[in-house]
Image 1 (cartoon, rainbow, N blue to C red):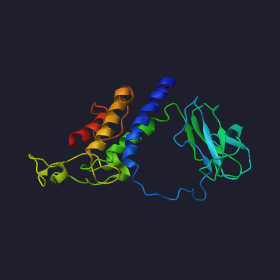
Image 2: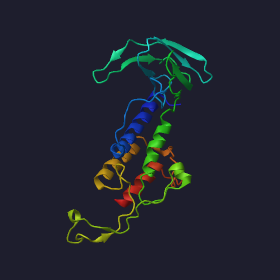
Image 3: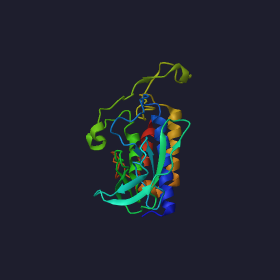
Image 4: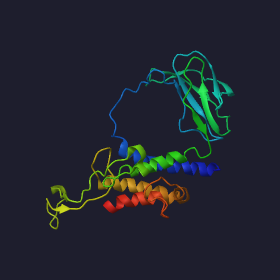
Length: 252
């Protein structure tokens, strides 16, 4: 079980790591209609989950006038009854929102929040290590950006694919040319992570990302020594974060 200090370290480590991934993914997706489709609950919970003993808030949207909310256990038994806060509206949104505070629930488990007349919330969990899986998935994201390796079903599951670009023979661009390596010179540039959802690879972006990863490891070595992501190098005695960073470093 993590104490308060351990929980904070776990969260900070994940935030540091997530920032590296988000830098690469922030331009990867086209804008979409952000309005929820019919049937989606108008109750916003933290779908990752909550810490026992920590704050637990949900946001209820819509015109429902009901003020009571209920927290249901996995057997749909009511474990908590509370009152929604007064409606608030942001200048940036047309939605009326109300907060549901159920911070007093500290027993680990799987729960659902219900407001009469609305769809129930998506299920959520309360658990001591609630962010550990997030940390694993975020770090595993770098594996999927490997450019010159095939991603096998064993490690990539449904996202398995053939190797992308071997880049064993590339041409030096005029902007990077010099006397020892004039424009058009063929060099090997194998390895490295794809960047920003495309097939390019950048030294500057890689440097920032690797610096963030290594800083996270330096600050939280015990956490990352125990975090296995399920990559080909897992179990070799080297933390997976360092193995993944080394893959990109070899390209640099």
